[in-house]
Image (cartoon, rainbow, N blue to C red; front, side, top):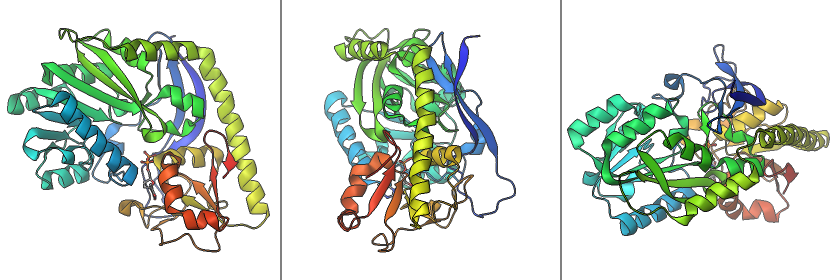
Length: 393
Ligand code: TYD
């Protein structure tokens, strides 16, 4: 058997399934285990949650919720325009239009299976197919709109279970001289930061550049450039072209592959060591929470992220530890965290003066949050984080 289990994060709920009731009677749980495919060098979950259960009209995540992401989308759109000057752009997983709204409506098309989100972009006059990305949909799009010279997909391809079909579908609608940009959290950074919270139901795969490179060997596509971004705690932006397009392959590809190889991304032992670090991280985080609670301090959560759902459920951090989460996403407010049932509320202007500890669920926006919470920090308020190791900041 080529798939080997290396990480057991226990029974977990769907990470973006914010609950209407604190005592739900029908919450769905699955076993969150990560496996390493020794042939493809690919990391995935051992059990996939059916896509229709995760991506539907109640999907809560909004890509344009933070200034950091708005800024990143603006910058990258500008770069795309000046570097590639695409005439027609397709985005797979267009969410609320955070990326596409930076382009002229007539030249862009979105694909977004969450109907509540597709509705938003359709109302912005961005033609959006509220369907899952697959070969069938690619044929429809090809018939209706022809081929595209740029296909962008951020934080989506890692969510799709059938990767062969996904790349096939991309190949169908990509112009012969077109470019496919795939962006997803970097497995290398996840291992370095012990950010095991990137493992949850939606992230069916956690990609290394090496794994994508291996997967593409069986397709008409190949990587020609790689960029590292700081998004979601460290992501890879992978530029892909058709093999028939004789545009040169940049040194960044060789460099990234060799950096990953040297780090041990292709060796099972790396994942065994990572798993040990995850167990230690849980112990240390619980020590911190226990100590604060023993001193009768209140703790709140800051940013009810999907990522934090993995941490809370794996570590057993529930309402005994965290009174409530504050989160700027409207659709999460008034609801409860999946599995751990912690209330989520709208942030007030400031964190209340009686609060001295906040668990940083949205650690990937640490800079933006620390900037916003200068007053809290200067009066001695502390943040608790588990990345890259559990600590009080
Ligand atoms: P995010 O880190 O994008 O992702 P994921 O759910 O994929 O793990 O989610 C960030 C959440 O944090 C989002 O719900 C908005 C919230 N947030 C705040 O509440 N305040 C802030 O200042 C920022 C930057 C984010």
